[in-house]
Length: 320
Image 1 (cartoon, rainbow, N blue to C red):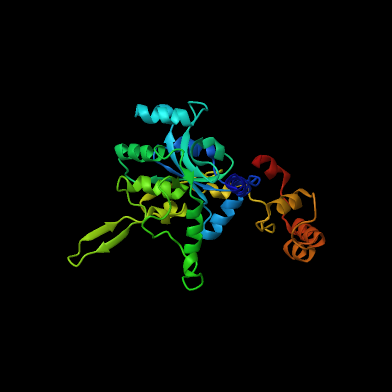
Image 2 (image 1 turned 90 degrees about the vertical axis):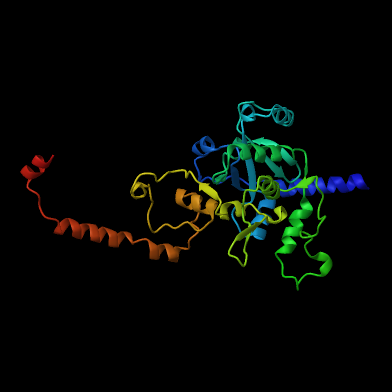
């Protein structure tokens, strides 16, 4: 009976983890972003799986997954930690690696390149000392092999509902002293505990005493979601868009299409319509209002030709 239950849970985990197709419209330059990564950086991912859709609904955020970048194997200074990473990862030793907690897999080592086709963002802890960055990486590596805490995800979902709606037995157990087990983790709580370990703030509670002094209180790591690293004022956001706008006014030279054609968050229908493979997602009446009629355009062009001044051939030749 227990074996059957494990198989059912495994099937559910595989079903939830199944990913949809990647977007054909890239939002970030993966090569530039991966070049910028430093050990201790948090990598945010917009997932494409079913469980990612659940997390988006729960957290009301685009970011559904977070991972900790640990560098390449030879970047890890501690021989014991380096050996543990070698045992957990059998791939290319020159790969850029990260620690992440995944449903159905637990806490693992994975190459950053697995998210090459996804929307990514770097959250860098501002002013983090190199020694503390090493401790953060070490804390994450020490949790390799831990199971993914499915109960934590359900508790977090229940926590977002008002207390008066759910029965007491259904309410969140996140604030219980011994809630969950120490051998389970989710991506964001694992990273939050790693930064708490070196007293680096993410979203602390700040209290002002009567004498005006400030006191920082650590937030429960189990309450963190991926978006909190993006929201935190103590993390620098690093983005490398697919087409950069580093130069002043370069956005004016982007290859914009016809202003009358608007994207309505339906990628397949939009691409097919603009390639002429199927009927456009906009109805004919709307298209007729957005696009000028050929007769009107032709008449306007004819009028412009008639009213345009005649240029002396000699002047034209001199201009050339």
